[in-house]
Length: 84
Image: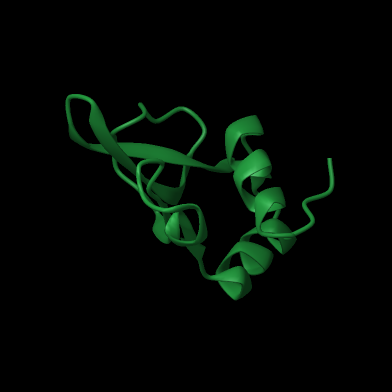
């Protein structure tokens, strides 16, 4: 199984929020998740937009999970280095 750390969309029209989740690479965007590792609220204040569990993300990266480009940018905003 190939895992990817990516976003899962929630919310209403024009008021989205996202969960940062670990999913099978072949699963649809809003499909079944393996584990939830964080949240991303683009509408919130700048300091409260991103929250995630760094230990869980690191553990999944060690297991071989890949990170989507969007999640990589989000994690880099919080100074969490994700290697390419």
